[in-house]
Image (cartoon, one colour):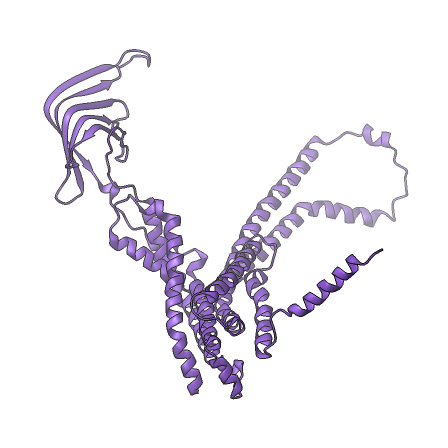
Length: 478
């Protein structure tokens, strides 16, 4: 059961944790919007869709934002206790720093378990919704916006140019419309004035033109390409064109198309897929060995037959001239070359297939270890943050933020490098995805040892003594 001290520490820990989590989530969301701003802006998307996309992304990054929030909040809490001398009072009453951290350790373990459950159960479903929506938004055509003096080609098979637009943004002047809906002719419509507006349902764009002409060019029948084309010219007082805006309406893609991605599976499914892929690799290699044996078995039988007759046949010296005097069987040579080329092609195809399966297997392993490593990082970064807060004795958003950012940059750097090396096959998937923890865990243990023993983080006196001795030796006369 939690003691009164643990409750006090946890109560002072909740608010900084919530604030820092919201702050880190906001930073990640801003980074996401900056990356995909060109795919979102200018497409006439509903605010509901944009908020839905941002909300799904904010949920996805929870396993990444939570460790940073824990690191920052733990540094702030223990730093505040040390700065206000409460930590000194606890130590004077016989309560060690580790005992003060019990509440933080307990909460970190709970959050690590919750983060793993989220990554394993909820994250695959959210990823499916997010990537399906992002795909639909990215393929969505830009919103209809006819600018002055520029050909607008957003509507399929049409190009529209206006010289000037009225203040109401509906009235157009000096209009040219190129119609390419028919492959064998070109139609050009010009008008002095026009009005553009949407239908009541918003599905159609209606363009009314006034005082203009329509020019239609058609090639002459049974004439060469260089022959002149027939042109029909019509003048009109009013001309109306209705454009179907169905292509501007965002259509949702079937989410089942995205289910094959490895981020859409939990640990059990990933383990099953990894084992299935390994079985397919083993079967491909076994099948290749059998094919090669079938190709070269005639040569092996001849070799065995020759070996059996070796003792019964009297040794005879064979000269080079006697070899070339014999006739060469062209059919046998062609067959041998065909068998060799077939074997080489089969080996290359199998090698490419196995390489592709190995890459998929690595991706499955990476995703499995990611779910565990990011969850365990909550505990490691909590230890680092707490002991650094006790060492620097500073709270608030000053020094703790700087410390948290530096450690998180190191954590993220090793995490990205490890994942990249694992994908390239340079490191095993387990080592690559646990690389950040492997590097930071010794640092957490060292800092905890220093803080528990109240020893200085860096013993500057030793460095000064070594520097003084070196200086004396360098200044000593030869």
